[in-house]
Structure formats: structure tokens, C-alpha cells
Image (cartoon, rainbow, N blue to C red; front, side, top):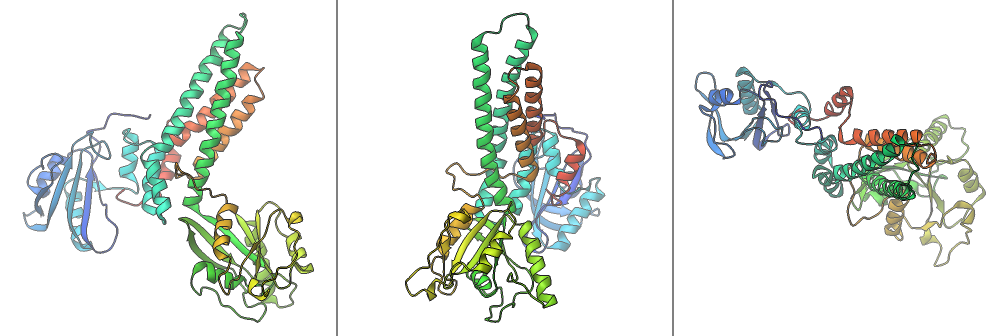
Length: 454
């Protein structure tokens, strides 16, 4: 851990810690040195530690700015690890600014975005993954994302990383011991221990990577493009999935000329669904621009939902569209308009297209619930009993890098020096997640994205 002793002489920082706008209660938070002087200036006394104290918030002339509750948390038992004073008053913007200005006049400075959480990290109260989960918890748009962020804040993600790092250290010690005595014959028992440790670490890393992917999906969501010929019901399906009329529906081909985006949730997983222009040859310059934009959007998608007309089956134009899709983007085939089949079904050989299609009716809603489940499955979501960790893109990159180094180490079992170096690089990648070895410029980038007051 990056544990440090709190810095009692650190300058005091202050900010409004509640959301902008009016509310019943607003909080001004102060952290750092000279809290006692500041408290005496605005409250007339230093409150008893960890006891709610009611009183007046005073200006420089002893006039009352507001009335509320004051809480004092002495170092190191506070969020930041420093002395912290919280002033909980009325939530009007004007009165909060008056209280904040009074704190600044008494020697505090305005906190930078994320500076309270950054101090908590620097003082060893949180590691970097936990600190990032504070912002993720605030920004969570779904209940599942909030639960995932809380698991990371409680330290479950960090514990998994620390456990793997401890095993890597153990393995590195064993390998280094072998390197220190090259003239002696290495015991076969040591080789077996080495191989067993490496297998265990790689297995645990793969499990953590899989779990983190779920958390990353909860945080970022997945981008799903609906593509297909004109008039197959793309806009109708978007409206059905969204539960409201977000796209114009018409029998006239080429009605959709641009990409229509709609955010929705399925079982707590955020999806960004995009309806695109019907794919066909067109001499209309505006429609052609929409079709070109549809192709651009598909290349950036996480999944392409290919919509076909069930009443017509797989047509020659559908085959042309399928052949022209990006090969590196997963696809899900969906036959719409099953209500026109009259109880029958068209023959369809799914083998050449890598997957069994889903049959739906955007008009009646038949099959749409099954489609929702298939969408989650196609973007990589799996229901997990233990829950997902909230993971950011940098976490995913670090885990993937560690995975690569361990895979490379597996190929170098007979070259001990290179094997040891790959283990070191894997450990370094994992340490970046929790912040044991993190460049200061990266810290600045991470915490600058926090809101002021956190």
C-alpha cells in the first residue's frame, strides 16, 4: 500500500460537497491544517470530535450566516486522513457560497476537482482503484453499476489484485533463488512449485480479467447498431426496446437518414442502441450520406444487430449486407415481422452465419424479451453470483498487459533470466491498478475528472 502519515501542516482546502442547485441540506467540507483556528472563526469553538454539534455559522463581525450542524473528524480518522470539518447547513446556493467564502477568508483555499479523494489516496486511506470507485459510485446510472462500484470501494477489486501480486512476489523469490545458485542442480520439487504457482496466478488473473470486463461493461455500456435493409422495422424495434417513440416510423423506404441514438438498460446493464439508415444502393445524396454514416458507426460498434424481414426470409440483398459487415465486430441476426408469418416459419440455414437468429415482432412485442437476453449475451454480459468489479479502461489495459507478460513467461521456463523479467513486468502492471507505482501525471489526469468537493 502507498500508506503515508497524514501531513498536519498541509494547507486547508474547502469546497461545497453537495450537488449544485437547491436542496434541503448543503455541506461545506474543509480538510487540512489549522482546522481549529478556522472552526473557532466560523463556529466560535472547535466541536467535540465525531459528535454532531448544532450552532451558528458566523461572519467576520459575528453575524449569523446560517444555522446548522458541525462535525469534526481529527486526523488520521477521517476520509482524507487529515483534520476534517464538515458544516451542514441549508442547501441554498447563496448561503452555501457565503459559508464557503467565510472558510476561504479564514485561510482555506478552494479545493481542486477530486482533491479530497486524492489526499485520501496519498495518505493511505484508499488505494487508487478504491479512489476511482468513489467517482464511479457517484456517476453510476444503474443499480447494478452502483453495486459494482461499491464492491470496488470496499476493496474487493484491490484485494484480488493484491493477492495476485503477493503470489507473484512469492514466485519471483523462488525464481531468484534458482538464479542465485546456478551451479547447484535445481530440485525437481522447486520446478514443480514454480509451474504450479504460475498456473495458479494465470488462472486467477483470467478470472479477475473476466470479472473486470463485466464491471467495465457496467461503467461504459455497450454500443449496439441496428442495421439492415430499408423497411425491415429497425426504427420500430428501437421504439419497442426503448419503450417509447424515439424514432419516426414510416412505410416509405429511406425515412431514417441519420443515426438515432437511444440509451437504455437491460437488467441493469447500460446499452447505447443506434438506429441507422437502411442499407441499399441510393441515388439520393442525403440518403447516401446516411448510409455511409451507418457503415462508419458499425465499425465502432460493440455489436451489430442485423435485422431481416421474416416474411421474406434471407434475400440476396441481405446476403450482400452480411458480406459487407465489419468482420471484427460481433453480430446478432434477428428476423422481424413474425406476426406476418401466420404461424409458419421461413426456412433458414444459420450455419454459415455463426449463430441461431432471434425471431421477433416489433409490432406485437413477441420475442422481444428473448432478444433482450440475447443482446446481453452477445455483448459479453454474464450474471455472476459474486458480482462484478467496477473497472475502468486503464484497469483493463493493465490486466491485459499482465496477462500478456505471464503468457510470455510460460514460454520462457527454460530461460530463467527472461522468465524472471516477465514476472517483474507483470507485477508492475498490476501495481499500477492500485497505485503502488503510478506516475504523478497519471494521478493528475485521474483526479481532475472528479467533481469539486470529492
